[in-house]
Image 1 (cartoon, helix red, strand yellow):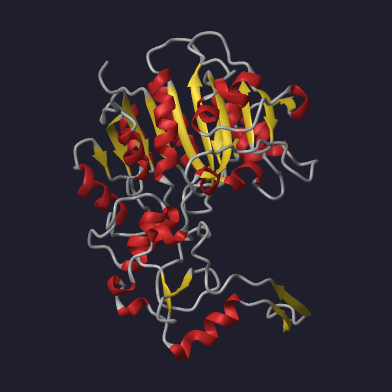
Image 2 (spheres, one colour; image 1 turned 45 degrees about the vertical axis):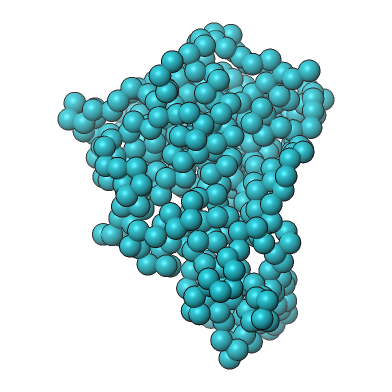
Length: 418
Protein backbone atom coordinates (compact mmCIF):
# COMPACT_ATOMS: atom_id res chain seq x y z
CA UNK A 1 0.00 0.00 0.00
CA UNK A 2 1.06 3.65 -0.38
CA UNK A 3 2.77 5.26 2.58
CA UNK A 4 0.09 6.16 5.16
CA UNK A 5 -0.40 9.88 5.65
CA UNK A 6 0.34 12.06 8.66
CA UNK A 7 -0.85 15.50 9.74
CA UNK A 8 1.45 17.15 12.26
CA UNK A 9 0.55 19.87 14.77
CA UNK A 10 3.05 21.86 16.86
CA UNK A 11 5.76 20.52 14.58
CA UNK A 12 8.73 22.32 16.16
CA UNK A 13 11.94 21.61 14.25
CA UNK A 14 10.71 18.27 12.95
CA UNK A 15 11.55 15.55 15.46
CA UNK A 16 8.23 13.76 14.97
CA UNK A 17 8.62 13.89 11.22
CA UNK A 18 12.16 12.50 11.21
CA UNK A 19 11.11 9.51 13.31
CA UNK A 20 7.90 8.85 11.40
CA UNK A 21 9.49 9.10 7.96
CA UNK A 22 12.16 6.64 9.07
CA UNK A 23 9.38 4.23 10.03
CA UNK A 24 7.47 4.48 6.76
CA UNK A 25 4.97 7.33 7.19
CA UNK A 26 4.42 10.28 4.85
CA UNK A 27 3.75 13.73 6.35
CA UNK A 28 1.28 15.54 4.07
CA UNK A 29 0.43 18.55 6.25
CA UNK A 30 2.12 20.34 9.14
CA UNK A 31 1.65 23.41 11.32
CA UNK A 32 4.20 25.30 13.41
CA UNK A 33 3.70 28.80 14.75
CA UNK A 34 5.21 30.50 17.78
CA UNK A 35 2.86 33.24 19.05
CA UNK A 36 5.31 35.20 21.19
CA UNK A 37 7.92 36.10 18.60
CA UNK A 38 8.21 37.65 15.15
CA UNK A 39 11.07 35.35 14.12
CA UNK A 40 9.71 31.88 13.38
CA UNK A 41 12.96 29.97 13.86
CA UNK A 42 11.36 26.54 14.36
CA UNK A 43 9.14 26.82 11.29
CA UNK A 44 12.03 28.11 9.20
CA UNK A 45 14.16 25.14 10.28
CA UNK A 46 11.33 22.73 9.46
CA UNK A 47 10.86 24.19 5.97
CA UNK A 48 14.61 24.23 5.36
CA UNK A 49 14.71 20.45 5.75
CA UNK A 50 11.31 19.32 4.47
CA UNK A 51 10.20 22.04 2.07
CA UNK A 52 7.22 24.38 2.21
CA UNK A 53 4.65 22.11 0.54
CA UNK A 54 1.87 21.28 2.97
CA UNK A 55 3.40 23.40 5.75
CA UNK A 56 1.48 26.22 7.44
CA UNK A 57 3.14 28.80 9.70
CA UNK A 58 0.01 30.39 11.13
CA UNK A 59 -1.93 30.47 14.39
CA UNK A 60 -3.70 27.10 14.61
CA UNK A 61 -6.88 28.81 15.84
CA UNK A 62 -7.01 30.83 12.61
CA UNK A 63 -6.19 27.77 10.53
CA UNK A 64 -9.03 25.77 12.04
CA UNK A 65 -11.48 28.67 11.68
CA UNK A 66 -10.56 28.85 7.99
CA UNK A 67 -10.88 25.08 7.62
CA UNK A 68 -14.36 25.09 9.09
CA UNK A 69 -15.31 27.98 6.79
CA UNK A 70 -14.01 26.08 3.75
CA UNK A 71 -11.13 28.52 3.20
CA UNK A 72 -8.34 26.09 4.11
CA UNK A 73 -8.21 22.47 3.03
CA UNK A 74 -6.99 19.93 5.56
CA UNK A 75 -5.92 16.76 3.74
CA UNK A 76 -7.19 13.37 4.83
CA UNK A 77 -4.69 11.45 6.92
CA UNK A 78 -4.36 8.18 8.80
CA UNK A 79 -2.44 9.62 11.75
CA UNK A 80 -2.54 12.93 13.61
CA UNK A 81 0.58 13.68 15.68
CA UNK A 82 1.81 16.49 17.85
CA UNK A 83 4.12 17.35 20.71
CA UNK A 84 1.67 19.80 22.22
CA UNK A 85 2.22 22.16 25.16
CA UNK A 86 1.22 21.17 28.68
CA UNK A 87 -1.17 23.91 29.69
CA UNK A 88 -4.57 24.61 31.19
CA UNK A 89 -7.24 22.31 29.74
CA UNK A 90 -10.14 23.58 31.83
CA UNK A 91 -13.51 24.50 30.38
CA UNK A 92 -16.57 26.35 31.60
CA UNK A 93 -20.24 26.55 30.72
CA UNK A 94 -21.50 29.56 28.81
CA UNK A 95 -24.99 30.94 29.35
CA UNK A 96 -26.42 28.62 26.70
CA UNK A 97 -24.71 25.60 28.35
CA UNK A 98 -22.22 25.12 25.52
CA UNK A 99 -18.66 24.43 26.58
CA UNK A 100 -16.45 27.49 26.61
CA UNK A 101 -12.68 27.66 26.97
CA UNK A 102 -10.75 28.77 30.02
CA UNK A 103 -7.01 29.36 30.15
CA UNK A 104 -4.93 31.59 27.89
CA UNK A 105 -3.17 28.76 26.07
CA UNK A 106 -5.12 25.68 27.13
CA UNK A 107 -7.28 26.13 24.07
CA UNK A 108 -4.50 24.44 22.06
CA UNK A 109 -5.81 21.07 23.21
CA UNK A 110 -9.25 22.01 21.94
CA UNK A 111 -7.80 22.72 18.50
CA UNK A 112 -6.50 19.13 18.43
CA UNK A 113 -9.97 18.02 19.48
CA UNK A 114 -11.50 20.22 16.79
CA UNK A 115 -9.34 18.70 14.07
CA UNK A 116 -10.11 15.16 15.26
CA UNK A 117 -13.81 15.93 15.18
CA UNK A 118 -13.53 17.32 11.65
CA UNK A 119 -11.23 14.74 10.00
CA UNK A 120 -11.67 11.60 12.13
CA UNK A 121 -8.21 10.08 11.48
CA UNK A 122 -8.05 6.44 12.58
CA UNK A 123 -4.94 6.99 14.75
CA UNK A 124 -3.41 9.69 16.92
CA UNK A 125 0.05 9.91 18.49
CA UNK A 126 0.73 12.69 20.99
CA UNK A 127 3.66 13.64 23.23
CA UNK A 128 3.78 15.78 26.35
CA UNK A 129 5.70 16.24 29.58
CA UNK A 130 4.97 13.62 32.22
CA UNK A 131 3.50 16.14 34.65
CA UNK A 132 0.36 16.24 32.49
CA UNK A 133 -0.80 13.15 34.39
CA UNK A 134 -0.83 15.07 37.67
CA UNK A 135 -1.68 18.64 36.71
CA UNK A 136 -2.88 21.02 37.99
CA UNK A 137 -1.62 20.97 41.57
CA UNK A 138 -5.05 21.94 42.90
CA UNK A 139 -6.86 19.08 41.09
CA UNK A 140 -4.42 16.27 40.45
CA UNK A 141 -5.08 14.49 37.15
CA UNK A 142 -7.81 16.86 35.98
CA UNK A 143 -6.15 17.93 32.73
CA UNK A 144 -5.50 14.38 31.57
CA UNK A 145 -9.01 13.33 32.61
CA UNK A 146 -10.51 16.09 30.44
CA UNK A 147 -8.36 14.99 27.50
CA UNK A 148 -9.13 11.29 27.95
CA UNK A 149 -12.86 11.81 28.37
CA UNK A 150 -13.20 14.02 25.32
CA UNK A 151 -11.16 11.59 23.21
CA UNK A 152 -13.37 8.76 24.40
CA UNK A 153 -16.48 10.73 23.49
CA UNK A 154 -15.09 11.07 19.95
CA UNK A 155 -14.76 7.29 19.74
CA UNK A 156 -11.04 6.88 20.50
CA UNK A 157 -9.53 4.43 22.91
CA UNK A 158 -6.09 5.41 24.13
CA UNK A 159 -3.00 3.92 25.70
CA UNK A 160 -0.34 5.97 27.44
CA UNK A 161 3.12 5.52 28.91
CA UNK A 162 5.62 7.70 30.74
CA UNK A 163 8.90 6.75 29.08
CA UNK A 164 12.45 7.57 30.11
CA UNK A 165 14.49 7.42 26.91
CA UNK A 166 17.57 6.17 28.78
CA UNK A 167 15.65 3.04 29.83
CA UNK A 168 15.63 2.02 26.16
CA UNK A 169 19.29 2.64 25.44
CA UNK A 170 19.24 6.31 24.42
CA UNK A 171 21.93 8.70 25.76
CA UNK A 172 19.61 11.05 27.66
CA UNK A 173 17.43 10.65 30.76
CA UNK A 174 14.42 12.32 29.20
CA UNK A 175 10.98 11.45 30.58
CA UNK A 176 8.01 12.12 28.37
CA UNK A 177 4.37 11.07 28.21
CA UNK A 178 3.47 9.22 25.01
CA UNK A 179 -0.20 8.84 24.05
CA UNK A 180 -1.49 6.62 21.23
CA UNK A 181 -5.15 6.65 20.25
CA UNK A 182 -7.18 4.42 17.93
CA UNK A 183 -10.62 5.17 16.51
CA UNK A 184 -12.54 2.08 17.52
CA UNK A 185 -14.01 0.39 14.45
CA UNK A 186 -14.16 -3.17 15.73
CA UNK A 187 -13.94 -4.92 19.07
CA UNK A 188 -12.44 -2.85 21.88
CA UNK A 189 -9.05 -3.70 23.29
CA UNK A 190 -8.50 -5.79 26.40
CA UNK A 191 -6.49 -4.00 29.08
CA UNK A 192 -4.32 -6.98 30.04
CA UNK A 193 -3.26 -7.39 26.39
CA UNK A 194 -2.73 -3.71 25.67
CA UNK A 195 -0.64 -3.08 28.79
CA UNK A 196 1.39 -6.30 28.70
CA UNK A 197 2.47 -6.55 25.10
CA UNK A 198 -0.38 -6.24 22.62
CA UNK A 199 -0.67 -2.46 22.59
CA UNK A 200 1.33 -0.24 20.26
CA UNK A 201 3.39 1.26 23.08
CA UNK A 202 4.03 -2.06 24.81
CA UNK A 203 5.26 -3.57 21.55
CA UNK A 204 7.48 -0.61 20.72
CA UNK A 205 8.77 -0.16 24.27
CA UNK A 206 8.50 -3.51 26.08
CA UNK A 207 7.74 -3.90 29.77
CA UNK A 208 8.10 -6.72 32.25
CA UNK A 209 4.88 -8.63 32.27
CA UNK A 210 2.30 -9.73 32.19
CA UNK A 211 0.36 -6.80 33.69
CA UNK A 212 -2.47 -8.45 35.61
CA UNK A 213 -5.69 -7.10 37.11
CA UNK A 214 -4.22 -7.49 40.59
CA UNK A 215 -1.64 -4.80 39.79
CA UNK A 216 -3.77 -2.14 38.13
CA UNK A 217 -6.31 0.41 39.31
CA UNK A 218 -9.54 0.76 37.40
CA UNK A 219 -12.22 3.45 37.43
CA UNK A 220 -14.62 5.28 35.13
CA UNK A 221 -14.39 8.96 34.21
CA UNK A 222 -17.88 10.47 34.55
CA UNK A 223 -19.35 13.84 33.71
CA UNK A 224 -18.96 16.20 30.79
CA UNK A 225 -15.86 18.31 30.25
CA UNK A 226 -17.16 21.20 32.35
CA UNK A 227 -18.03 18.88 35.25
CA UNK A 228 -14.57 17.34 35.11
CA UNK A 229 -12.96 20.75 34.98
CA UNK A 230 -14.79 21.83 38.10
CA UNK A 231 -14.52 18.73 40.25
CA UNK A 232 -12.12 16.02 39.04
CA UNK A 233 -9.32 15.47 41.54
CA UNK A 234 -10.55 18.12 43.97
CA UNK A 235 -10.90 15.68 46.86
CA UNK A 236 -7.69 13.69 46.44
CA UNK A 237 -4.07 14.55 47.05
CA UNK A 238 -2.58 12.57 44.19
CA UNK A 239 -3.43 11.72 40.62
CA UNK A 240 -5.26 8.46 39.91
CA UNK A 241 -3.29 8.07 36.66
CA UNK A 242 -0.14 5.97 36.99
CA UNK A 243 2.75 5.76 34.53
CA UNK A 244 0.95 3.46 32.08
CA UNK A 245 -2.65 2.88 31.19
CA UNK A 246 -5.45 2.15 28.77
CA UNK A 247 -8.82 3.88 28.37
CA UNK A 248 -11.77 2.51 26.40
CA UNK A 249 -15.19 4.08 26.54
CA UNK A 250 -14.13 6.23 29.53
CA UNK A 251 -13.16 3.14 31.51
CA UNK A 252 -9.60 3.48 32.82
CA UNK A 253 -7.06 0.77 33.64
CA UNK A 254 -3.75 2.11 34.95
CA UNK A 255 -0.61 0.56 36.41
CA UNK A 256 3.08 1.12 37.00
CA UNK A 257 5.25 -0.93 34.66
CA UNK A 258 8.93 -1.86 34.49
CA UNK A 259 10.77 -1.14 31.21
CA UNK A 260 12.66 -3.99 29.54
CA UNK A 261 15.57 -3.39 27.17
CA UNK A 262 18.14 -6.00 26.17
CA UNK A 263 19.88 -4.01 23.43
CA UNK A 264 22.85 -1.64 23.48
CA UNK A 265 22.93 1.39 25.76
CA UNK A 266 24.46 4.74 24.96
CA UNK A 267 25.98 7.41 27.20
CA UNK A 268 26.77 11.11 27.09
CA UNK A 269 30.32 10.26 26.01
CA UNK A 270 28.99 8.75 22.78
CA UNK A 271 27.69 12.10 21.52
CA UNK A 272 30.64 14.32 22.47
CA UNK A 273 32.76 16.09 19.89
CA UNK A 274 36.55 15.92 20.14
CA UNK A 275 37.93 18.88 22.09
CA UNK A 276 39.67 20.08 18.92
CA UNK A 277 36.26 20.62 17.29
CA UNK A 278 34.78 22.61 20.18
CA UNK A 279 34.91 26.41 19.74
CA UNK A 280 36.70 28.31 22.49
CA UNK A 281 33.51 30.12 23.54
CA UNK A 282 32.15 26.89 25.01
CA UNK A 283 35.00 26.61 27.52
CA UNK A 284 34.40 28.20 30.92
CA UNK A 285 36.92 30.88 31.98
CA UNK A 286 38.78 30.03 35.17
CA UNK A 287 37.45 33.22 36.79
CA UNK A 288 33.84 32.03 36.41
CA UNK A 289 34.27 28.51 37.77
CA UNK A 290 33.48 29.56 41.34
CA UNK A 291 30.06 30.83 40.19
CA UNK A 292 29.30 27.52 38.50
CA UNK A 293 30.45 25.54 41.55
CA UNK A 294 28.26 27.62 43.86
CA UNK A 295 25.14 27.27 41.72
CA UNK A 296 25.57 23.50 41.39
CA UNK A 297 26.51 22.91 45.02
CA UNK A 298 24.36 22.13 48.04
CA UNK A 299 23.03 25.08 50.04
CA UNK A 300 21.55 25.80 53.42
CA UNK A 301 21.32 29.57 53.70
CA UNK A 302 19.28 32.00 55.82
CA UNK A 303 17.30 34.34 53.60
CA UNK A 304 14.65 37.05 53.85
CA UNK A 305 11.49 36.95 51.75
CA UNK A 306 11.47 40.20 49.77
CA UNK A 307 7.70 40.65 49.77
CA UNK A 308 6.92 39.79 53.40
CA UNK A 309 10.23 40.29 55.22
CA UNK A 310 9.91 36.81 56.70
CA UNK A 311 13.15 34.96 57.37
CA UNK A 312 13.59 31.39 56.19
CA UNK A 313 16.29 28.81 55.43
CA UNK A 314 16.86 28.04 51.77
CA UNK A 315 17.89 24.41 51.20
CA UNK A 316 19.07 22.94 47.92
CA UNK A 317 20.82 19.69 47.07
CA UNK A 318 23.88 19.37 44.82
CA UNK A 319 23.97 18.73 41.08
CA UNK A 320 26.98 16.82 39.66
CA UNK A 321 29.88 19.05 38.67
CA UNK A 322 31.16 18.16 36.21
CA UNK A 323 28.54 15.90 34.62
CA UNK A 324 29.52 12.26 34.28
CA UNK A 325 29.99 11.25 30.67
CA UNK A 326 29.94 7.49 31.29
CA UNK A 327 26.18 7.57 31.88
CA UNK A 328 23.17 8.95 29.98
CA UNK A 329 22.97 12.72 30.34
CA UNK A 330 20.56 14.62 32.51
CA UNK A 331 17.52 16.04 30.71
CA UNK A 332 18.23 18.90 28.31
CA UNK A 333 16.30 22.01 29.36
CA UNK A 334 15.32 25.01 27.24
CA UNK A 335 17.84 27.20 29.08
CA UNK A 336 20.82 25.04 28.15
CA UNK A 337 22.34 27.66 25.85
CA UNK A 338 24.47 30.70 26.69
CA UNK A 339 27.61 31.26 28.74
CA UNK A 340 25.89 32.57 31.88
CA UNK A 341 26.58 30.29 34.89
CA UNK A 342 23.61 28.06 35.67
CA UNK A 343 22.64 25.29 38.05
CA UNK A 344 21.01 23.20 35.33
CA UNK A 345 23.25 23.50 32.27
CA UNK A 346 25.55 20.60 31.55
CA UNK A 347 29.27 21.05 32.23
CA UNK A 348 31.97 18.61 31.11
CA UNK A 349 35.65 18.33 31.95
CA UNK A 350 37.81 18.09 28.83
CA UNK A 351 40.94 15.97 28.52
CA UNK A 352 43.11 19.02 29.22
CA UNK A 353 41.32 19.61 32.55
CA UNK A 354 39.28 22.59 31.40
CA UNK A 355 35.51 22.74 31.85
CA UNK A 356 33.08 23.39 29.02
CA UNK A 357 29.43 23.50 28.06
CA UNK A 358 27.70 21.30 25.51
CA UNK A 359 27.65 22.47 21.89
CA UNK A 360 24.44 22.70 19.82
CA UNK A 361 25.58 19.68 17.81
CA UNK A 362 25.95 17.60 20.99
CA UNK A 363 22.51 18.68 22.16
CA UNK A 364 21.07 17.58 18.82
CA UNK A 365 22.77 14.20 19.13
CA UNK A 366 21.30 13.70 22.61
CA UNK A 367 17.83 13.91 21.04
CA UNK A 368 18.80 11.81 18.01
CA UNK A 369 18.76 14.60 15.42
CA UNK A 370 21.25 14.69 12.54
CA UNK A 371 24.28 16.90 13.16
CA UNK A 372 23.68 20.64 12.73
CA UNK A 373 19.95 20.15 12.15
CA UNK A 374 19.19 23.51 13.77
CA UNK A 375 22.11 25.33 12.14
CA UNK A 376 19.71 27.25 9.92
CA UNK A 377 20.49 30.84 10.88
CA UNK A 378 19.01 30.89 14.38
CA UNK A 379 21.19 32.05 17.32
CA UNK A 380 22.98 29.38 19.37
CA UNK A 381 20.77 30.08 22.36
CA UNK A 382 17.70 29.36 20.27
CA UNK A 383 19.28 26.17 18.95
CA UNK A 384 19.66 24.99 22.55
CA UNK A 385 16.09 26.11 23.31
CA UNK A 386 14.78 24.02 20.41
CA UNK A 387 16.51 20.91 21.74
CA UNK A 388 15.17 21.59 25.22
CA UNK A 389 11.68 21.51 23.70
CA UNK A 390 12.33 18.59 21.34
CA UNK A 391 11.70 14.89 21.73
CA UNK A 392 13.94 11.84 21.35
CA UNK A 393 13.60 10.92 17.69
CA UNK A 394 14.41 7.24 18.23
CA UNK A 395 11.37 6.77 20.49
CA UNK A 396 9.11 8.20 17.80
CA UNK A 397 10.65 5.87 15.22
CA UNK A 398 10.06 2.82 17.41
CA UNK A 399 6.43 3.71 18.04
CA UNK A 400 5.94 4.65 14.38
CA UNK A 401 7.09 1.18 13.25
CA UNK A 402 4.46 -0.46 15.43
CA UNK A 403 1.71 2.01 14.57
CA UNK A 404 2.12 1.45 10.85
CA UNK A 405 1.34 -2.24 11.33
CA UNK A 406 -2.16 -1.24 12.48
CA UNK A 407 -3.07 0.82 9.41
CA UNK A 408 -5.61 -0.64 7.03
CA UNK A 409 -6.76 -3.44 9.30
CA UNK A 410 -10.21 -2.43 10.67
CA UNK A 411 -10.73 -3.56 14.23
CA UNK A 412 -7.26 -5.11 14.26
CA UNK A 413 -5.77 -5.80 17.65
CA UNK A 414 -2.36 -7.41 18.00
CA UNK A 415 -2.48 -10.15 20.59
CA UNK A 416 -0.28 -10.13 23.64
CA UNK A 417 3.12 -11.73 23.34
CA UNK A 418 3.30 -15.27 24.67
